[in-house]
Image 1 (tube, rainbow, N blue to C red):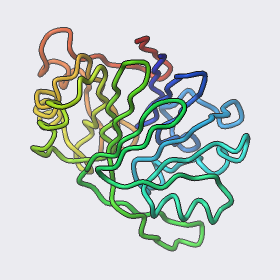
Image 2 (cartoon, helix red, strand yellow):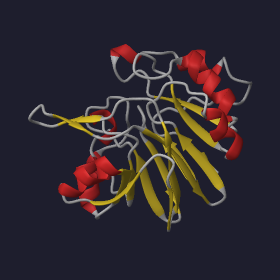
Image 3 (cartoon, rainbow, N blue to C red):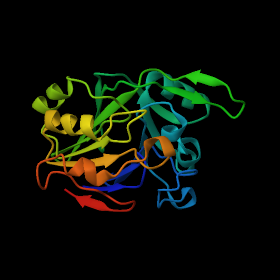
Length: 226
């Protein structure tokens, strides 16, 4: 399994011959190395409905009829846009040909602003547990610290956890370090920082709060092979 980070909360997983994109915010994301015209994912997984996470889902999904996995509200809205979707909700898991996806809770808002400046409710925000090839990836989405992360860590042998550290809208470095302790992941990667002025952070300050060797700062395009 190949896992790569692409700025903000964008993560790419290659598993079972499928290309999976999580929260593909590309256009308008100055920190990403991806270009919409060069990406053609087989699967897109969304944590919540905010525009900087739904991102370029519609354009990307239409290229090769990608399956979009998200909560029921987002999946329904995107199906109305002509996309192939699979709706889920928090606590639910589903096994696909490329791996198992489970949505976890996340404490955050979830809405989508249309081109007409209408705000649409997009259900509850979520995190993602992705399991394939005997490995487990946890993408926390946008969230605060919450104590049930202890349960996620206790009952899942997490190989790589992607945690937001930007503060203001999500956990900051201090709370994310506590989350890392709860989750007990083998590798922890900071995300959702430096994209906008309110979430400017030095990721090294987060890494220094973790046990030596546990945290990894990934630049856009960096890969982890599991």
